[in-house]
Image 1 (tube, rainbow, N blue to C red):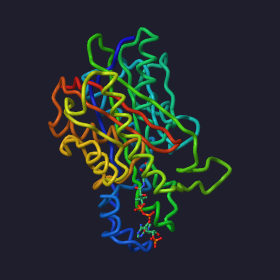
Image 2: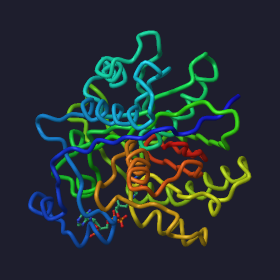
Image 3: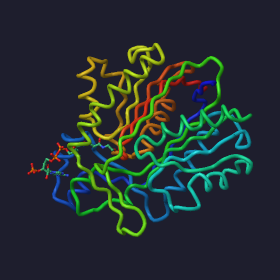
Image 4: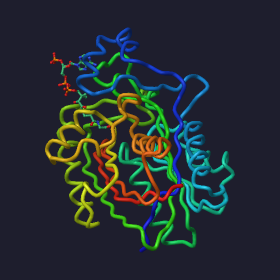
Length: 315
Ligand code: UT7
């Protein structure tokens, strides 16, 4: 089986900034509490003219542009989301239509919550290997603001909206390793149709413990499978749920904190979008060079977790 590498990235962020002080006007909270407990200072919410599908289309368009390919080159389109505009048509079908991707390729959504983008990468790798196609488009996109109970201070301060995307290609020689896992549980719960309103509920402390134990395990497994250590990679991009989770993992692993990217201060927790948004920020700001190795780690609802060691081969 051939590996995959990242050829291009893109992101789309809604226009409405919501600061901690804005939330403190709605629920009994404070900038001080949110900042010290989570590292989050602001997040973005879609306004009435924006939606998850529109963000996904924008991020996907930028990722194809940055890859130097054409829409017609894409051989599979996967969107990871738990908050798309419709159950059907899927977000991926809307991306296919709006970007003019070919009709003879698979376009579908997957839901692995905050691990979704990484699940998507591995599904894309499998599908490319089983076909004559070379390139896949993988999007992580959420409009979590539509799932928030704005009277519940324990969740409404945590999440934000946004989209990130990557174009990956099959490669003969790129280093690559992956790990995926799931352990069914209701620790993070968003009820489906028929249970309106479908608000996110979370057992925060249980999820915190899960996250801080699963991230080192994912990294260790990637190290064993690939032969590279987290010290060999340019950046480790973990799902951006809480700054304290990443700091805890860095301390426990005695790792270099500068290697662990953090941007939850600006976006909050954007679930499936958080890893590809971070990827695109790094690429756009010139912090990634072609040939750099990355470790990506996702964890969250399901419960699910996922990791990838992958090469950046962008321009
Ligand atoms: O993306 C999926 C993955 N998600 C995660 O990884 C999230 C993991 N969990 C966490 O990040 C943290 O558990 C939270 C940030 C969600 C909560 O932090 P915590 O330190 O575990 O706080 P807590 O739930 O134990 O609450 C401590 C106190 C409580 O008050 P009492 O009972 O001590 O009086 C809460 O009622 O803080 C209170 N509280 C708040 N106070 C002000 C909870 N939310 C707020 C708030 N503002 N927004």
